[in-house]
Amino acid sequence: MEQSNKEDKYGFDFPIEDFTQFFFSLDDETLAQIAYTYPQALRNMCVALTIDQQLLREQMEKRRNKKLHS
Image 1: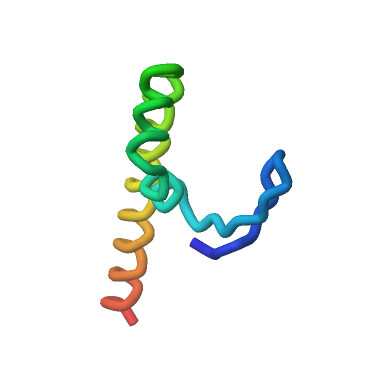
Image 2: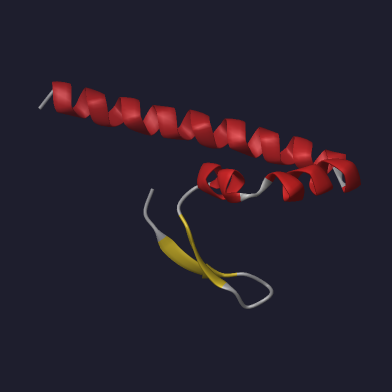
């Protein structure tokens, strides 16, 4: 995925490539706090992580097939 800079609602400028990168950048304390305070949000994050991983796998497979047929 292409890297781009996004500005969040608090005005911070940070690079975003994919949700997987964002998810794994969270420290354990933050994840624990989300799980304790907003368990549905953590479930939604896990769904987003699963979808992102599937998209990345499909993208890698598409590239591999393109190389094989070139």
